[in-house]
Length: 113
Image 1: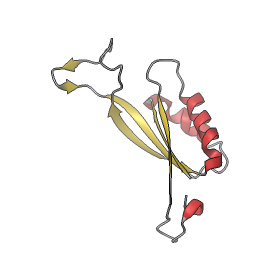
Image 2 (image 1 turned 60 degrees about the vertical axis):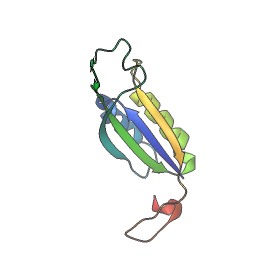
Image 3 (image 1 turned 180 degrees about the horizontal axis):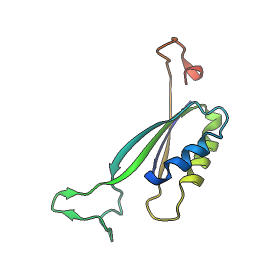
Image 4 (image 1 turned 180 degrees about the vertical axis):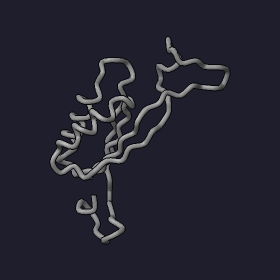
């Protein structure tokens, strides 16, 4: 089992979501509105830095728990549908999930995702 975490531009959420809905077996997705900055934030940025105060850039965080066999398809789908060709399109991370439990039924393992 894997956990896919993707940070994308907010205006790409609908396109990414519609594309992910086409993946058979996709168990679901969580979405969070977040703010942050990358390493290029301070270099030639239209965002300002005032002393110790940083203006954070809005992004959307997607979190998907899935079977191992779906990882490449999910990553490719996010990459293609979130791509604008501009700097700051986002990032995708994949981590290993050791165990999952469904509270309502007591199921565990891959059936719980």
